[in-house]
Image (cartoon, rainbow, N blue to C red; front, side, top):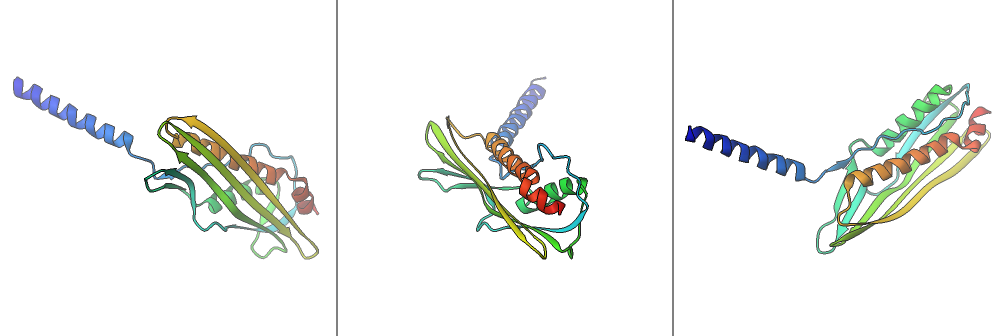
Length: 192
């Protein structure tokens, strides 16, 4: 009986160690799932092309700096430009915009900035986040360019929680994409 109990104890210890190591491993990506919060009841009857380009020099979303250590950088699981493209095109399609690469109306979106910088100290942290997206809508007669920005700062005790940083970035992205879809200038341009 003793060898069986000893074996169970060893197996339990090994499983516990694996669980602790598995749970404590640092995440390598943030999960972004943008959603348009409110959509206007507009219905369009137009064709447009949609192009989203990431102009950032680095594609990470979160950067955590701690004195004396290499910075930890986390990128999105899916490319940010793909997420923005699919979210906006899905919403606009529901409103009646047909997407066609040779359409005379062109919607060009650039991601100018999308970063949450964390300064981690021993017992506290501070964050600065900035998200800037430029939307250019053009047809044969005119061009409209609007820039949408979201900036924020926060601080907290102990260690920055990746899940909270992820949630806050998603909220900022949701707000900006909702502002784009609800922009009176863009809506009027697309309606003509």
